[in-house]
Length: 222
Image 1 (spheres, helix red, strand yellow):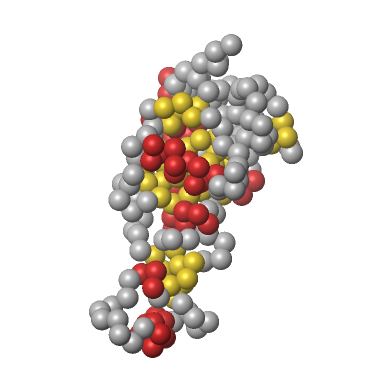
Image 2 (cartoon, rainbow, N blue to C red; image 1 turned 90 degrees about the vertical axis):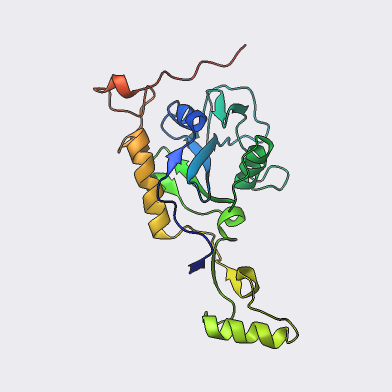
């Protein structure tokens, strides 16, 4: 696998997104994007109901619904229903962020945060966001030289070297490389607690350290 971006040296979480994550309970799932190259994580809770009802508790398919009013990048954000209108969840979040003025130079990478042991608490795939950045050399051999040779053979009149996407193809499942996934997981553990995947209804932090716990998000207006 090759890439046109580098792993950010310092990964942080948007303040509003972190505040929303502190309101998570066991079984919640969050859509997440990390901006490049600055490495800021933005999140929105997923919903399992296409009608996206009011912020009330429910459980669908064994997963729980996030019941607080979430915020992201200075704005309230509704829960995301994956593939609503044919748009992937990560792309919906990217559109929201663009409207909020977040347009990173190198775009985003995408993943999901799971407050359960499933996938170790981190889903690492996003075809809409990761496929543009993590790719293979074009051709069955996945060989750089062959990819360049084939490119120039197909476009004999083109001058200069090809750009990244001219000689590469997307990875099939849109997964983050392990190094990226591990770095993101370390950031989540540092901010949310090493055991965030087994959070309680009250807080995902250790109960013996209440001084480090911000207040829970307020209930939605009636």
